[in-house]
Length: 104
Image 1 (tube, rainbow, N blue to C red):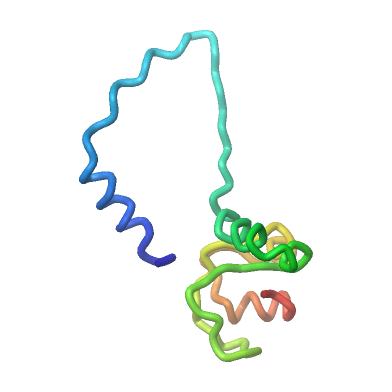
Image 2: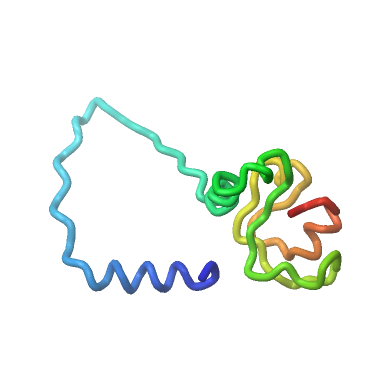
């Protein structure tokens, strides 16, 4: 699911009618919105399992061999504690385990 979400989302959007036009925003008002989707899946995992909240958490499609640093699973989401160790989305799980042996 994690690796195919974009393709599935695009299929759903293509099957929907076009949205109504947006009203013209006032010229003098400007809004900037930053949404950190890189942490989204990890945040959901921590919400659903409070015992993970103080741990470095990553989400990927496979955990590989238990304790192995050779896993080639790609990380799709990392919480801020994991990012503090240098772990980021797109990184291989094996590399993340080298940076933070206690990563969950």
